Amino acid sequence: MAFEDFKTKESVVIVYTGENKGKTSASLGLMVRSLGNRWNVSFVQFIKYWGVSEHVFIRDIQPLYKDQLSFYKGGKGFYKAGDLSPKQITEAQHKQAAKETYDRAYQDVTSGEYDLVICDELNNAVNDGLITKSQLKKLIKDKAPNTNLCLTGRNFPEELLSLVDIATEMSKIKHHFDDKFLANPGIDY
Image (cartoon, rainbow, N blue to C red; front, side, top):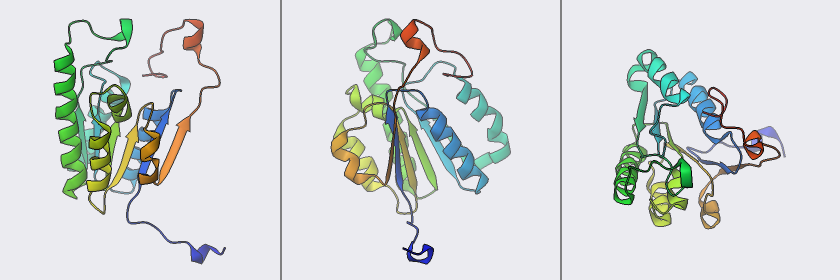
């Protein structure tokens, strides 16, 4: 097949999933590439409410990109993750935060204002039952035709793979967490 036989799509749906680290990092790389292309980008983050490096980075670069970069941090932390879950957050509070974050993501992905909407950790919210698979399907199907959508997090529902254009699974070969080492700032978060 010759190069001239290929064509481009108006927009794509991208999934970064899997058990190893790198999903959020990949979406941040996609954000950088998109901003470098002068696109309007919305980064909507589920789950992570504590201070992580990407929050600092996005906060620091927002003045450079003004209205070109939108950031929304939702969620109340890990849900049903044993000792990693914040004890003071109720199930109702987790679900409410996930709903508010989903509503923001849905608004951004259907508005046509953004060239790229990244929903970081959304797959985790679906897997944990904070967001339904039907809501995820609606987000994908209702997106504006010119909006690219990136979904990250573990356990993307296999039955929805037919709705996406690019899916990458981060497979663990080795991770220091298995040897009882905690996550490192600047590397893992």
